[in-house]
Image (cartoon, rainbow, N blue to C red; front, side, top):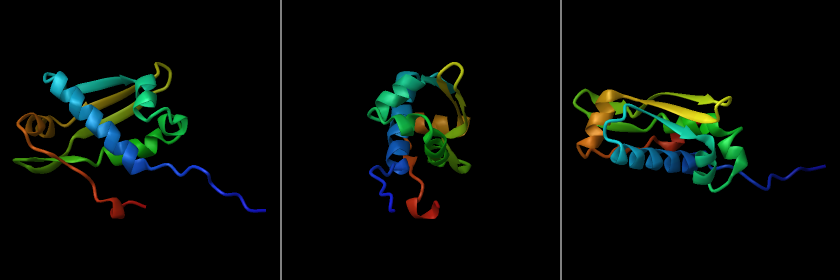
Length: 118
């Protein structure tokens, strides 16, 4: 018997969606040092892909927290810490202050190298 996967999640695509969503959030809330997103919003952001918004979310966040921004102290991760609060149905993100400031000053986000992940 052979089982074929009908759905292969694209973690890098969803990480990119999440980071661009965070970038928009930072533009709208320039004083924010962290963000709290409702997991239902993440579900909608991921185009109602339930697996990516639940079971695979930690793997996606593991990639998303590798996105960096050029700072005076070298390239630094934008997301310094994340946690999933299942009880309150929330995603909590803390931002690196230096990377956040550089992003606000117009520096671009640097994507991680996809071939370096296993």
